[in-house]
Length: 131
Image (cartoon, rainbow, N blue to C red; front, side, top):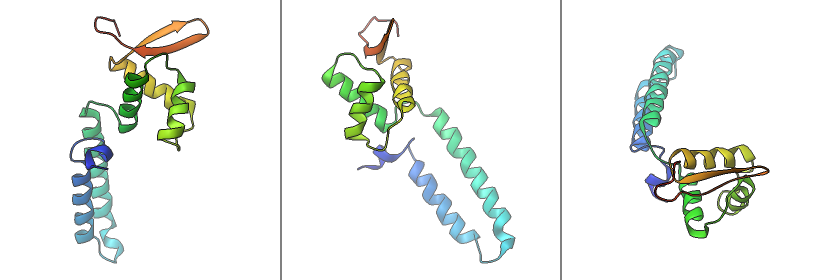
């Protein structure tokens, strides 16, 4: 697995490594250094949040879902996504996760929503479709 598969945004792992190196240099076995540690952790959380919000794109799981939809086509609902996740991401068992992933692909313009009574599902968006 490459770092691009595990990073939420480019440079995430480098940022974490730098934080760990800094903490190793700053932290001593006394409690006087805890304020510095807290400050560094808050700064990292702020930088991490800013980087995540500025990074467009899909999570690795959403990219796998999009690849499956492109490969197999057809109608996709939360039940079908959970069936896929049972093979590709066994830890994902909540319908809400599947629903959010489908919605993220829809908002990104990859999927079209078909909102029929008792049959809400998504299909691969075609060029010219309003997403």
